[in-house]
Amino acid sequence: MTSSLPAGLRERKKAKTRLAIREHAMRLFEEQGYASTTVDQIAEAAEVSPSTFFRYFPTKEDVILTDDYDPLIVEAIKAQPPGTLPVPALLAAMKSVFLNMSAEEWASEGRRQRIFQDVPELRARAMSQTVLALDLLAAALAERDGRSGDELTYRVIAGALVGVVLAISPPGGANSFGPADFSRLEQALELLAENFHLR
Image 1 (cartoon, rainbow, N blue to C red):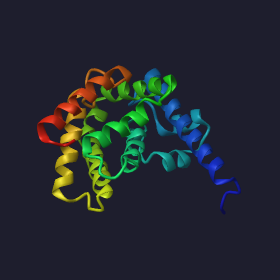
Image 2: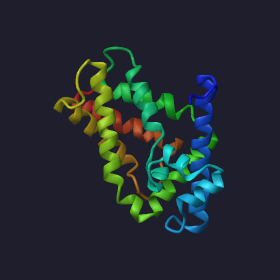
Image 3: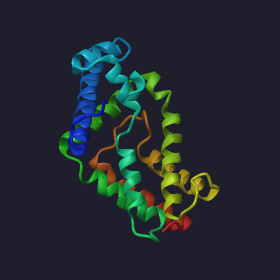
Image 4: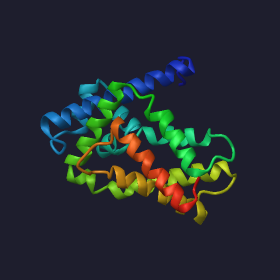
């Protein structure tokens, strides 16, 4: 049975539910520890069923590991003017996302990153998250040229760009990425562009 809610309202309701699940999960992780928190407890706190939880997050790990901003950056890259080279495209995309985040969104993202850093079993999955980010970025850059993200050129460029981001803010590192880090990231990407002609 399909919902009678208008599409825009339906999407806002889904976003609100997803946010509630993550916020309650993070609170429980902070209060009683990641390992001691169950999906059932998170679902109860968020006032949803366990099956609803799994519609939004495939596993408990994904509540923390899923980066909601990566898809937004990918869409912003695709929206850059034709002919924009990789570094300016990524910088413009990241600015359009990060510089428009509210203080509350930054605070929530900081909590997510801190939990990621503090839980060994989550840090162990850092590499798989990095590969996923590389795949998304390669596909976005290639799509702008009408090519495939599997092509070596785009995977190498994406790998270089992801490497710069990791150098500034490694997943599971000691510090969370925040607004104050953006100028350093911009400087690092410009350095990459100057040395490897990516702008």
